[in-house]
Length: 269
Image (cartoon, rainbow, N blue to C red; front, side):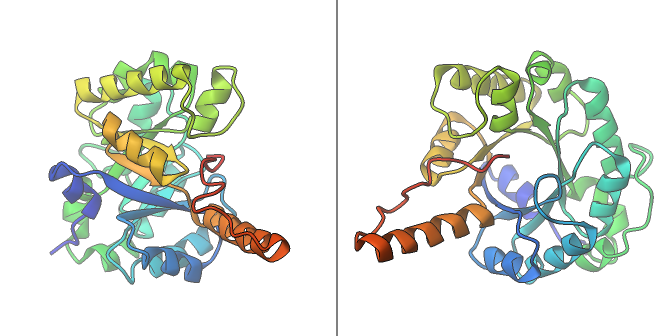
């Protein structure tokens, strides 16, 4: 029996997915993060320091737990997408989905024929997913297309109505840049709230899952209250940075950092 996808199970139960991010190229770091209890973890091949072979090791580290392994690929390229799936990723986050054509290309790379163009060769996926992985894969893996530009916002309806696209995932830093603002996330600004509202509305109209990249837990909780059902909270690099900075501050000044200090800034993704 194929291994179920816990992300799909949470969505089906009406619950949000609590995700985090992996940019450190280490299987042990990935295993440590997975043992923290996240619903899912994203191995970042776009902006993280991770190549294909390290991605495989990290997926193996995550696989020691029930945390669902996801990968953000570098680009909307069938080669990247299909190799990550064959390595055992149970979902793909694809950057810069700006229109219906790009969404269709992405979804096609995710699915076997007759609904897609994925080539058969699940060399590790069949070990992780089970012997009937090939027969079940189209219904197991999840496709999350990133909304990061003015063009994507303008084309939300045609993107969200793409058959087979499971979710849209907002990258707030690039979305900010595209609209003429500085990069960064966890922004309470009215213009950002308006953009996020547009994504939520389009996702609801077309029955796809809305997702958002967040930094601090407080912002992620607010996002869930708004209606987002896939939220990223920080990531390995951010947690190391925050923990180390807090320890150094206390040693230098004798004053402990306030809980959550520095957490309001999200990763640059």
